[in-house]
Length: 291
Length: 324
Image 1 (cartoon, rainbow over the protein chains, first blue to last red):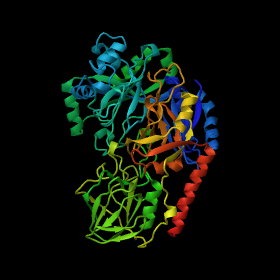
Image 2 (image 1 turned 60 degrees about the vertical axis):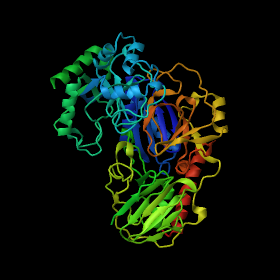
Image 3 (image 1 turned 90 degrees about the horizontal axis):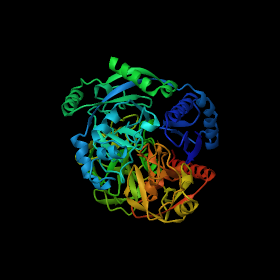
Image 4 (image 1 turned 120 degrees about the vertical axis):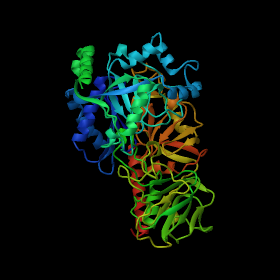
């Protein structure tokens, strides 16, 4: 890992902790961006953490770009040695894989896809060495995921699977982005899963849909009353496969204001996880199932 | 004292100076694309510079006033009509209850800013009235204005009728338009030939140009420095592990068509960026029409900061000229 700093015009500094994705890079980036926030450097207007990088927006009328850069570099050493632990929450997200809505959309944009004759899941299964879409789906939901970035649009989470690199699923993005994606599509690009918070353009492969809204600008949905965005970096997610009937039941509960997502507070220790991936994941699952 | 929308124009949105502070959640700052024009329009009608006004792109709306007001229209050269009589731009105009404000065909620029004394008084969301349609925030129910809408207007003192901004204080684009760029971010990912080519080539604004970003085409495709793609980035040489995008940053998916992100930027994604348009030139982008020729001009940080100071000085001269 080598940290690289670059100016994004006269108002941003982009800090790339590592070129490649890893939880170590994520933790260092999160730790640095937290230190920037805590140190209350004059002139900082926005701090945006990402998967393996972060960005600071500042007002160059208050602090010169060179001084801002020097302030950020001072924080790097401490971030290196920071504890890689988080008190966070694990959330169960119901997913209706192979749903009719993403299917209709992916058929509409077939000419933009690597494999015009199959579905996104068929393609993802094949290039990751699975015999069927069903086997791939099991690999997608059997381990928990880590929210390593929130962004793109309106509270969209990027999720990184909590498995060793050899077991990571990797799928390229569409050859050309779609102009439409159903709201709440569970997508995939590179090594990241995502949930499209709103309907719109997108380039990630489409695997399914969740009936659980994650963004509500009106703040009417029961669990989004305090804030309109559900996810934050560091959240842990477990996908729960569901069928049409359960999808419709949850959607009706959301509408009625009675749906409560399953959420349990947990501690995550990256060193413990690195030492024993399956054991740590099993503990996370126990905590979720006991909740 | 509402203003009635008779015709909405092509895409007319309520905008102020935006909602900073939520970009880390994918909610962009938004607000007027051409900030100096909005600020000036507000000053002319006696509002705070950051009051909400209307941003009309290419085609103006038709509005009926239910009470007397002071209005001003700045930005693009879009002929201003009050009850079909042409009126000057960049000038405080009185409009009476029952009169209609309309517009002729666009002569130059892309976005006109309409300020109304008292400001548009729709409910702020996350501290701003700016319309962010993708996230259904601000504006009228999270969208652009539509025929039949009734826009609430706040109480305002109103400016001095006839007050005007001299032509030399109205910033306009040249031809070809020059946008100054500070190279950086993933600039090292393209070859030296591609780096030179990007600044030497003439580009044209593509039809895909909106509040999120402006796309350009016509220059040579960028050649990448070869590398093994980092884990998690994706297989295309223009892919990176999804990171944050600065406002004004220039991403080039597939190395072919640069996209400059603007006020409604997506906050991040998986495409590499070659640099960033300097803050002083962001307003100019809001006035570009499709097919206009554009050159990107390489500058260093010192030049970027000098340009920023020049723009602040211009705004101060406008304030001084309007005695504010």
